[in-house]
Image 1: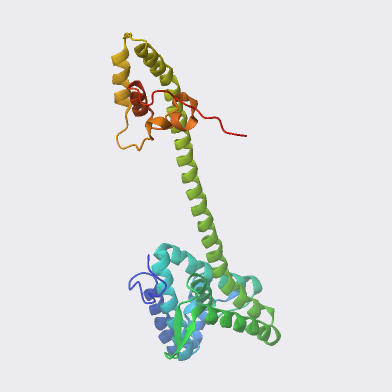
Image 2: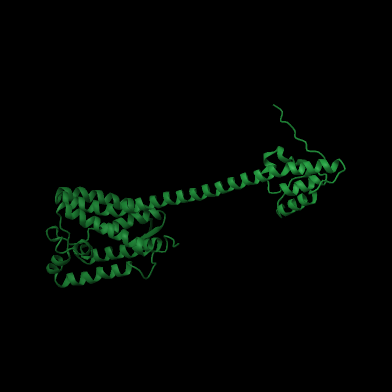
Length: 306
């Protein structure tokens, strides 16, 4: 996974073509501003007859400074986010941020003939959420953490909202806020949803593993509990000086059940079927063989003092 400090990756993907569209549309706009704005801007009254305007409005810039900051922000932030998320998820985020601006403008009846920076602001908020301590160099000299740039931009966004509200009306004021918020809201929901899904998946894996261990312990305990009376019976008959039939068969069975590499306790600690820990231990068969050989001579279960 790429770090948030890899600001200029990937070199191929969606970000570079988008940056190219900004320059192409700017040169078209310079040659014939009215015609290009009428054709590629977003006009609510002709939104259905010129549906490309829902997207192309953001490529229009009123001047070189708007082009520079729009394309520069897209390149730096977009490249990093695309490297972090992958092109597919990044494309969905870009579309949500773009349509957040144009759909809110359509609902409010507000035309847009230039990018109100809804997409770069969405990208900035998402980037600052993911990599708050990454430093940008303002004017290539002053180091500032991106989280402070995001907070400053949020403040400017609020100030512009009130300025547009009193100067141009509710439409232009809300378009900028709704557009900028749409992309970040989508990112926030996806981010937390993925986190919760990942947590749920990890918990499910742990639950499955735990259930498997419990089933294994139960099966092991059942086997050992059924096995030990036979071990005890063979031990008693051999101590009485007789050799019961099937004794070697039981030893062979225990030998096959021995699990190599199990760290078993001292013989004196073997409690047979009187202890739940012994019954669930993979070394039970090996300890049973030692018990048949006289180790320990007797099983002693100490009662806990009250």
